[in-house]
Amino acid sequence: MKMNKLLVTFMLLALIGLLAACGGDDDAGKQKELDQEALDNVNDSGFPIVKEEMTLKMFTAKSDVNAPIDWNELPVWNEYEEMTNIDLDWVEQVTMDSLAEKRNLAIGGGGLPDAFFASTLSNSDLFKYGEQGIFVRLNDLIDDYAPNLKAIMENDPNIEKGMTFPDGNIYSMPGIRDSDFLSVRIGARPWIAQSWLDKLDMDMPETTDEFYDFLTAVKAADEDVIPYSGVNMNNLISWLRGSFGLNNTGADNIDKDPNGDGLRFIPTSDEYREMLEYVRKLYEEELIEQNIFSIEWGQYMANAGEGKYASTVFYDPSLTFGSDDFVSVSALKGPNGDQLYTGVLPPLFNNGQFVVTSENPNPAATVRWMDHFYSDEGARLMYMGIEGESYIEDNGEYKYVDEIENAEHREQKMSEYVPWVGVNPPGLVTSDYFSGSEASEASVEAAEKIKPYVPNEIWSKFTYTKDENKFMNSTGTDIEKYVGEMRDKFISGSESLDDAGWENYVKTIENMGLEEYMNVQTEAYERYSN
Image (cartoon, rainbow, N blue to C red; front, side):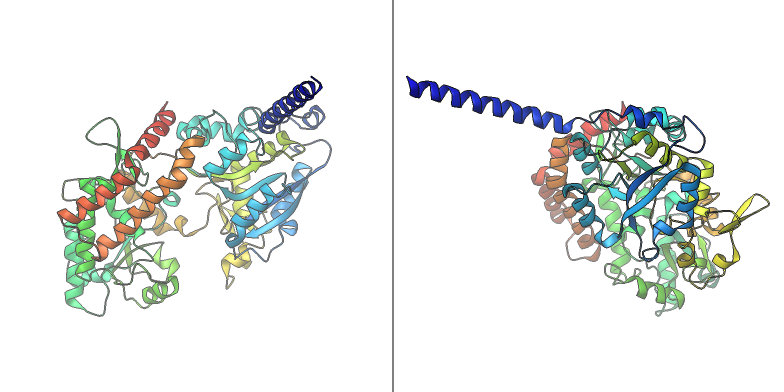
């Protein structure tokens, strides 16, 4: 009897412990209530942001260019501290090659900063740590303390869709490229050497057949000149895929099925095969540089600088390798009449660029601090710095001071004044203040040629549920990796593109789990489109 009582007592204690453990797990995912004293310290609008001075501990990624610069001494941040009454302690300043490791250590090792800045968190991690309560839910904070970001979200619903997770929550403040600044959303774009058009007495190619004719004419005229080259194969595919009706929403492996209401898996479509056959023909006939799959950046730049290329997909050649010979090309019309330019990024180009953590002493003030950089004045501060110190205004145009413009290493000098160089920070990128090669006159002119052929709908990246993320991070990743590897093998000729080779490729993808892959994408798309 005594033994039975002891057994019952033990079982009750175990049950209480189990319930407590379950309750603890629930609490772990709950977010702390906002501290009223901290809220009272936040001004509703204008500067300073807080009445009583406070400090934020920040984690940031930095490029190799600005790695030597201590952001605790950067003029822009010092200026913004004076404006906001918020001191910044950049406790972690990590280079891109160590970002993932040190970011994960900060999250998992108990040393959370108050915020992660420019730290490129994936949607999968945002959702995972947001559900756990490690990252603060920002929905209400954005509504109440981020009028600039809120206005952008309302103006472009695709941005809010890309920020919102399946649980309805927003866990980050993103990097956004102004939708009207098309040039920066295109990135690398196609160019052809005008001297070769003149030498061959040819017009600018307007179709894929005419581009092929141009390349073959160059090869026949001079064996020492490479008709086409680039730093990788991706840029060429990004240009040509719209000529075959592919990627009609800008996404990589899926788009709207042109023959139905659902989604299409692009890499098993007939149109994709037709594009591969075209590019393979170019490669097989040595119209494409033969080591394009492995060419090093320095080798490409050296060859380009020596005039060895008749065409390329890259950034403004006049700035990147000092050639004024190249003129831009638009979308080419393909064999079936398709003429799209689908290598365009959505305005929401990086969702996970600013995250507020559970350690933050004043999330409302922090969201107000970040929101300034979605305004015109904030974008100018981020990308131009301080007037009279790093830039001047000249008849409505903003230019860096001569010390920066005339510096031998311009980007290095810029990084002594402004934080954006090589970083892709959170906030808004506009054409008025961005001075990368995408803002050059030739690049903007190229974007205007391309503009009529850009699809009306460019999707932001989908967000996935916990189970969907598990699938996409395993089977989904395997499928996408296989697709990429086989694309290059088909083009290079190491795998056959005949009927048997293609059928085997399609069957392999189906056996890997294509049906479930498309089910996941369809579910994500339905959430996105509602």
